[in-house]
Length: 515
Image (cartoon, rainbow, N blue to C red; front, top):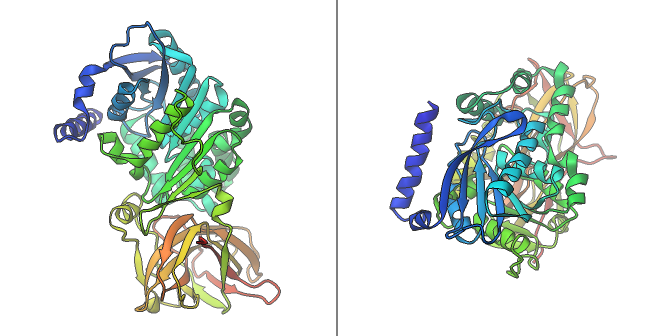
């Protein structure tokens, strides 16, 4: 199975080159080698080394290390690596331990993976014309996380481009204390298919997917150790220039946690959000097609590793691409995105039965938000026809002018359960004149240990986005208790009441761009 998938990926790269997607001529000019690198503890890592044309050891070049994405073979970055080498970089791409032909077991960005990254840098400095003073790391998804963790532990890393990665692993797949079922199942299944999960990962996956709450503290500690946010002080102390890129609809590593991580960085930094799902914003660049994310990555390294005055350090560091228009907007920081807030009240009490899907949902991991990226077709629902026995619905007034939603909408409400545990999912819709709602954002929330019949307050951040609500439309908040994206914890017969006490009114706060 692994060999056939590798051949399929290789064939896709070759086919892309044949129709002009990849610069094949450059592959003849630069040097491409397949090598073994000894990682931490003697584990052999399978790698590619791409050097600039004519490199003969008489000069040193900046080096970029690319750990592969989760479950991807070592040829994943071959095309962008050739492009980087053609512009004067030594590039070393390696298969992370436990995947494909590399040795060891999957550590999920654990200490051994961080040590491997340092060993790869050591090897590059010893066996290629790489400059020890100009070391960068980059990667998509798993490679992004490892790159950020390496920047915390290896001061030689001067610049990072972390694409579709995570700052906080727990806030990524366990936000709102709700297991992101499809995301975890996809990662776990891909890991078993293409690699060798270690005993710690197998145990964590089993406990997570089986909702073993007795192990919750252990699972959180496991995730914290693997979160760059935990090592933020070290990243800041080392001073690496960090570029973060992600998709608005990333169902594996949602944008909120990346934005929060970005705000706490103190060195040179840049944050880019685009339409799409996990790793879809970078995908075309892997085949040599025009790609904004990879263009920014090259400019980032050109400036911070080569010293090129290309202006990227003078641009607004937060760059947001609208899901509605495809246009970019620049901001001085993430806080500025939320500077203008508009609330609408959740005034009426709503009572609903749990365990029944109302039809409102966030779609399917990887597929739904990819379609939104390509065709601007978010999930839809007919708001007037939602079953009010299993869905709570509130709507804003109809807006006279276009409302440009930017950033993170927040829900504040009071919940009274009939059981001690429960899960609900909040959806924000753009509702047109015919009542058809287009999904703007959503987020889950789970509680345990609450006293039945006793109200408690909830503050929930929806996943960040950039979406334009047309004039004449309104926003609607819909809440139900079932979504295939998430594991729900609603006991049989559970009911939830959402109210708005006069002393603590319920509302949705929506961040809007000011022209």
